[in-house]
Amino acid sequence: MYQEKNTPVLGYCRNCGQKIMGYRNADGLLKVECPFCHTRYVSQQKSRRHIVEDIYAPTGEEVISYN
Image 1 (cartoon, rainbow, N blue to C red):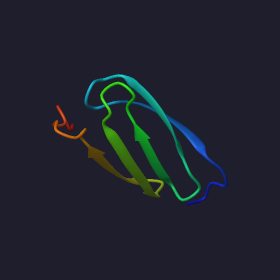
Image 2: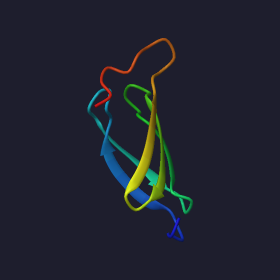
Image 3: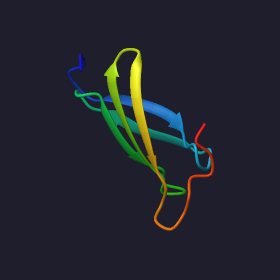
């Protein structure tokens, strides 16, 4: 991407609603796990208007909502 160092990203867990924070690296990749429900997020910033986000539920569980 265009950034030279890690950028903090603050958001909310789409599974439990708690605040989570992670760091987007210079390639635009963000990997974070919710410390409360252990849902994992992988987000890739392709351009300034295009972000691809994958949500992985904890083992043996399902993501409650994905909107």
